[in-house]
Image (spheres, helix red, strand yellow):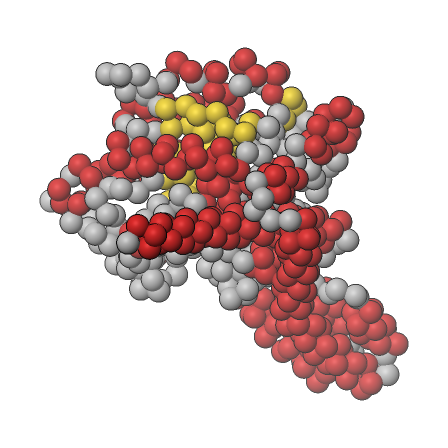
Amino acid sequence: MGLSHENDTMLEDKLSFENFKNQVLKDYRTVCESREASLLGRKEVLTGKAKFGIFGGGKEVAQVALAKFFKPGDFRAGYYRDQTWMFASGLATVEQFFSQLYADTDIQNDPFSAGRQMNSHFSTPFVDENGDWLPLSQLKNVTADMAPTAGQMPRALGLALASKLFRKVPVYGEMTQLSTGGNEVCFCTIGDASTSEGHFWETMNAAGVHKVPLAVFVWDDGYGISVPKEIQTTKSSISEALSGLQKEEGTNGINIYKLKGWDYAGMCEVLEEAIQNIRDTHTPALFHVEEITQPQGHSTSGSHERYKSQERLAWEKNWDCKKQMREWIISNALAEDTELDKIEYEAKDMVRQSRKKAWEKYLVPITEETKEAVEIIQAAARVNSSEKLDSIANSLSAIFTPMRRDIARSLSEAIDYCENAEERSNLQTYYSSLKNKFEAIFDRHLYNEGPKAVLKVEALPPRVQ
């Protein structure tokens, strides 16, 4: 009997270790995939296939740790460095990430904004096609990202306050499709430099006063683009600057935690207890994640080698979170070099394939539209015996990666040079149909077009007594 119990215990321990190992390696795979997406994404911009890119390189390990505690019913109010979090949460795929980078206007390819927002701006729907609430308490919810820095802070405060009201106000507590007793946490992320914005300070103060379930993560890579934090943040530390808000016994306030962005195990250990405390007590918290690196610089608009010293660049290379996580996995006998090499190779291959699929999906409809336009211009050229029209068609056909504006410009120019009335009419008819199509692609869904749209509300005439 004793031996059987001992064997059962050993088996349970082995299974527990295997589950732990598999989860760690899954997280490492996500880290590798996200890093490769950043690297290839930058190349897509620099080669002209995308127009601008901003990525989350260097924050991967912190975000796979965070994602473990992002549960159904929770909300995210983040910013444009959170791609790894979205991958780890199952809310975005690498292919969708590239579709967004290309500004693909097909909602099936870019479900976050159909090409209407900058890359790494994520969102999830809150209502169905009729404008009725989805079961948000069962979903991981993402508010639409915005570009202005710190703009996410007041929104995060409002979402956290909603959870407090769902818990405290009986009539709201009955809305179980929206909340499970106010147990939701609003996760908010922000860059260290953006903590200098007034929105940040007002939100942290209000969160402490109102006791709301808000978890704010500050990614601290030491710089605000090229400005080092010692000349933009008091005491060179946002957690030190906010220390007066630290909650103490018998007071309101916030809990403050300092974490290292490369320390996978340490972050998981702290976050498990800290996030649960936020859920249980509605005490907000600031997680100051230090020693983050930014291996590709701020964005594709510049190079960080211009303003970082050689010593700093060497430090960032050594303390890169991906490198540190790999070393931690090996030192704890969770995997060997060959197994991690395989994961890294597979991650690179998967990202390359995802990029290829996204590019093909983006380019195919434009290529077809280009082909149609070339054919109709060439038909007009034959009737008119026009070298100019031939030249317009050939120039459009020669564009390696045409854009829809190239098509519209070529058709407009062809109409001007077409002398045959019938062919000019054909060109104008096709141009008009294409213009209507483009307007539907680019100019719709900027505002609510559903049954509850503001413009569909019946007007009430004023009553004068």
